[in-house]
Length: 71
Image 1 (cartoon, rainbow, N blue to C red):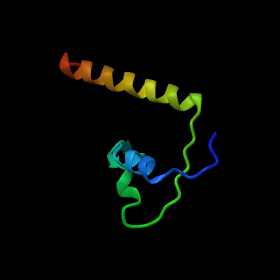
Image 2 (cartoon, helix red, strand yellow; image 1 turned 180 degrees about the vertical axis):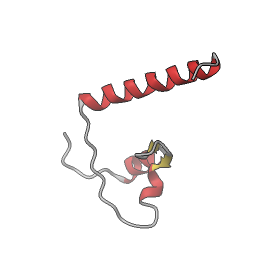
Image 3 (cartoon, rainbow, N blue to C red; image 1 turned 45 degrees about the horizontal axis):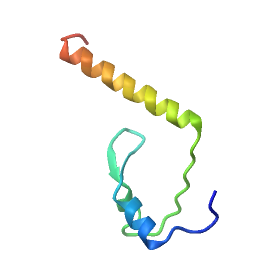
């Protein structure tokens, strides 16, 4: 774990990523701090990876159901 702040290059690279908000809408990470200062805390745990995988599988199943005419 790093205790130093990210440099300008790291912030610029990170700001180009799109994230999903709590309702699933895409939000550009850089837009969060474009007009005001914010504090960002990243929490990475194994459970977050498992939740992402489950969400992707659910979306895939939903797409398959729609494509085959099932709802």
